[in-house]
Image 1: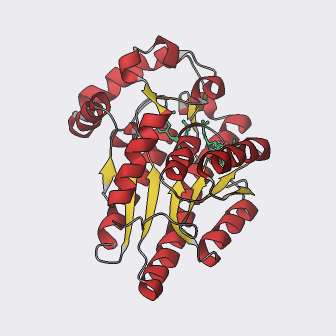
Image 2 (image 1 turned 120 degrees about the vertical axis):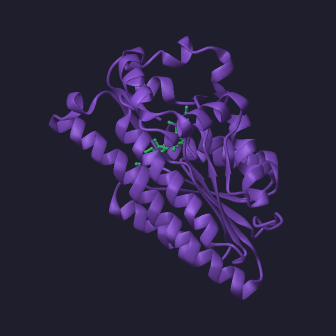
Length: 281
Ligand SMILES: NC(=O)c1ccc[n+]([C@@H]2O[C@H](COP(=O)([O-])OP(=O)(O)OC[C@H]3O[C@@H](n4cnc5c(N)ncnc54)[C@H](OP(=O)(O)O)[C@@H]3O)[C@@H](O)[C@H]2O)c1
């Protein structure tokens, strides 16, 4: 079991903990008996969640306000992972996306938003994963206590997607990088699990300024608590990857196998369904 047994000094650091899937993962970990370190930019939301987790579990829940899209924020959180010897798990859930064709996002505002996406979804996740691998393997060697990392990807990782090109590519990076490192860590006492959800009800609709989730059939829109449970269970077991839900598993398999010559024009034609440019979590 790469995530060691719960206990008062078995802390799990969770980024993106102020809402959605990250918050649900923090709740799932606390329910299993793990103290948490909650990371995001919105202090009020983190403080409220920390209060809730302490009340429900009786465990500590610490708040670290940090902008992971900025060097200073990444440095702060990396330092916690490297130096806080209580940390046995790291969850990289912070992320956002942009909808819209790249041509429509080629102005200054669009480029800044896409740049921010790459810095958060790719650079921050990569940086914190590298730090966590080093710190957790060192702790596993010196204390014989195992460690675990959970990286949140997406079913958009499994094929190129016109209309969300940068977001899907960022998640393809997360998926490829994380699965490779999972293999590298074999026998180290530390595991890296990739969680690839499909559409999930979170802060998405507001942030993306889209009603796409409302228009999607209930069958294809998941619940953050279910996604979190699947991710934490896979993390605790040290699995390589998990795609929660049968519909998403079929979509991921289809995305991997579909001939690009058929898939890309079809998705390109269908992208207007998403309703133009916006943020996509
Ligand atoms: N919802 C879906 O349909 C879906 C599907 C597949 C994968 N995902 C992935 O799931 C993860 C969580 O997304 P969500 O759906 O739960 O959306 P969400 O509710 O909007 O949560 C996004 C989280 O990321 C944090 N975040 C954003 N920018 C940040 C920054 N610069 N620095 C630090 N934290 C930042 C936000 O906190 P602050 O704003 O407080 O900083 C928030 O806690 C993302 O990686 C997303 O790509 C979501």
